[in-house]
Length: 386
Image (cartoon, rainbow, N blue to C red; front, side, top):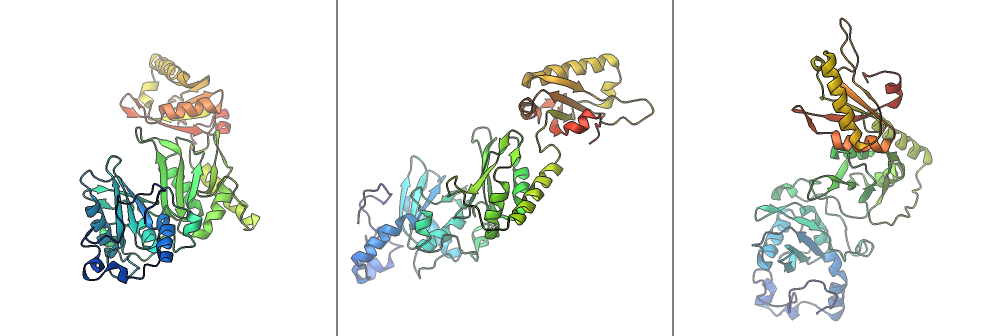
């Protein structure tokens, strides 16, 4: 049965063609395919469920062909115990777009397609491939047709995968986390999210060229009952000059408020914020503290000290209006707090944020600089040892 919806069937092929994949259709050799009860209703059902039975496989090597992809995925599905529709191969059809190096792999059943989602990151002919839902996948419709998540008891170790390594980021409980400050590291974002419970899957989206964060991420919690609590607690939190948007990925911006007790939400929000506050330099301020820029020895001589001050004013001034530069100096015979640090106070948070992005990780005199935000109240009181 052909369709004109642009979905990717091998031209002129239906799952009923004998000899298409000789290894895949044992029924086609010994008996006519018509012996199976393929009634018009079932044919229509096949059409209706195709979006939930197809799997997108990206990043294929140029050597891949329909036969090799079909054989590989049928074998690994059998190896992990992912075949639920009886004996035989799970794959019934493959379409490859060689130019863009991706394939659509059609499974026999909706459940087997969901189990295949656990294969994200599997090594095929020497390279890891992405396994995703196709763009025409309709989660709410698919939920009525069969399981949407991989079976948790699949033996992924049999094919060299660990649960949640790359997969685990599908389904209705996938959370979109937007509005993240670009300088937030993967570890910081993960720590913030894990204040609500362990994650099954996490992906901070990065620019392919530069490797820098694009300011948004996706995650799925191991305990799905945490999903709404985390969304409600984190959505709208201010981080520096940004505001977080946290919601289920397949829902629009109108996030319905969960029925949880508001007391619980408030407590969770406070925990998340406290964790952030405890992380040095996570919350944006107008003051930047640089470490590994200067050594105490370089600050003893007055001329050297003035040169360093001048350098810091020049470097720091590139990012915005500098109000003050403080470089604590060693004092003879007494401990001097903050020696070895450089403090840059800016007129606004925006300039300090740009300076942090521009200076953190830069090399000065062979040392890699660390730049973190510093509490304004401590800086104003001359407390440089926080």
